[in-house]
Image (cartoon, rainbow, N blue to C red; front, side, top):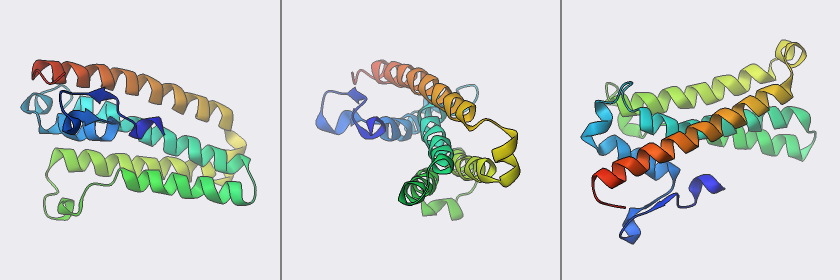
Amino acid sequence: MGYVLPWLTGTGAALSFHAYDLAEWTTLIPASSVETPSLLTAFLLRLPLVCLGVISAVLSLQLRGWGQVAFVFIWIALAAANLPPFEFLSFSDNPNYRQQAALAGLTFAAGVTVMLPFAKRAIRLEWIGAAAAAVGAAAALIGLARGYALLSDYGLE
């Protein structure tokens, strides 16, 4: 829920960004395309959705009944949330769209991987969930700091 609440509030209502909006906004700034690696700030702001998808997949394995169905649905919805717009089919060379497609694929693949029968026996799901939570939190904090710095550079804070 916190992912879609305002993370940064600018001078106007249109400049109140939640994480996904902030990630999209940073891709429009020329400075983000020369970051090393390219679009790092957008990646860091989108990575928490991937981590939430992994956590949802892990939780679906620990529940039964409707709870399991709900978390599988959440995992698939989070993978879909990272998908690029339909223009990706025409402009597949766009690095922003490629990043979104890769993160959507990663979310889906990670969920499928933890649901495989051998994976359930070979790995401790609690560790996967805890690692995903830690990576997501760190990425969110670093991405937020970098996004705020970009807003400050443009005097929009």
